Length: 385
Image (cartoon, rainbow, N blue to C red; front, side, top):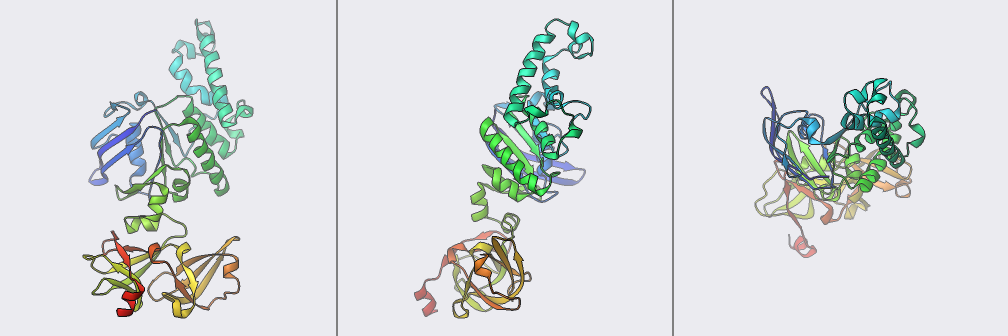
């Protein structure tokens, strides 16, 4: 296995800059996800690492080797695509064995009929059979080895594609949205399998997805990409709890973070719809500013204690929890509150509601969408104000 280093990677197609100077260090054995909306450059970056696309400028290093200009086959990387790319006429066993046969057998040893006349073929095939059996055991596919891809479910075909990558013993695994063709229930199951496989192999995994739930549940770190740049990189908790850019805050999290317009007083204190908040921006922050509140940090409050007021306009019953959509003056979109099922009982559409939150749970973003530092206003300061 190996670490991967990217230095100032740029890529242009004609006059369009797809990657605008990406720097990234991926540790040996790390599971890192490149996540972002369609067109942000994440798949292009993965193809550059694989050698399937040449960067316009910048450098790629795998292990201690500079691989700029090195052919894909010589980089010893394994790619798993969303299309599986299995040979339909071959069995599961033969699909997994393909990379080993290409590497270990000569041209004559791969020819039908003549191959068994070439000395050493049987010994090599025994080694290949043992290796494929080990991988099939690892992936729970021993009973599927005789089947053809057309006889398999989507999840089973994806396992075959992963098995074919594992037998190569690559320096790193590159996975390009491998679960996007599966249904929702199977995606949840497969992302657990992939995360467990990573732990067993202790290999370097570079995973591309537009699904932030996949990135959050599987990764050691997440690199959030927007418009050809890495906007923020960190652990899932860091990216979710401490986003440094409004675009990151809005992209990571489901349901999406609530964003409200806030007024900035001369002393830095924030207000929403004319109601002062117990929050003050650091000196130097200028308006307009926006306040970010995750649905789970909001709480129902009596009108006298409410920091935000509105009217219940929609309910989403998800079984164990309920999402309440509340129309408020400070936001064009409804504010979403996440409650357990019992906490939302008896609330009818059209009911006036008050909301509050702990000051430490609020996130403030300045006029250009960058994170703005804040401090809590004490009760004594509020009285004097």
